[in-house]
Length: 229
Image (cartoon, rainbow, N blue to C red):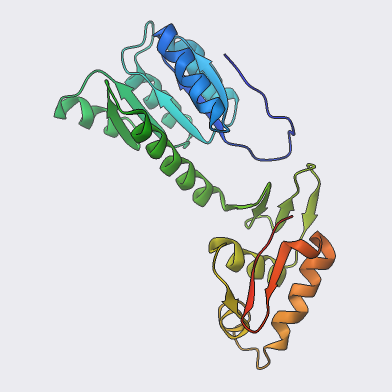
């Protein structure tokens, strides 16, 4: 089973699942699709290696006992080719030595079958957050902030370039999206050395002008919090 992102320029939760048990593989692919992931399923190791090398993913789930190419060897080959996507080994091999081998091969996590579905989902969410942190991406509702490139990627696929100060302000809001930030705290965190808190208002105006009025919400008498694109 394979999925494709509706908007090529918009980062999505892309997951590569390499599992030779056809029934389990399709069940997990359906499960993660329901959770909002775009899933590619490979039923054997060589296909999984090809996909891992040729496409970009946020998370890898790799069975260990794969035909033709073992999951541990597959991970080693991906890491040798500088593929750093966080990986979880999902396998029936559960001894300490098995776990050590998986982690030494380049996996970030290791889960033994039979497993609890909620635990698997939570572990994959944690790996996805790690991938976003490494990539410098932060969610903005249905869009994304690429803080490395100073770009906002809108749900439509359009990209909007930000100045350094605009990017830092939006990042400060996006890293704590539910928190209401005072103007004073934002001045101290983003505009170090600025004397007047009105500089925060100025850059909120700039962000709204570029991204729409809803991107930053005003909380009267307190400050600002992240809104929606």
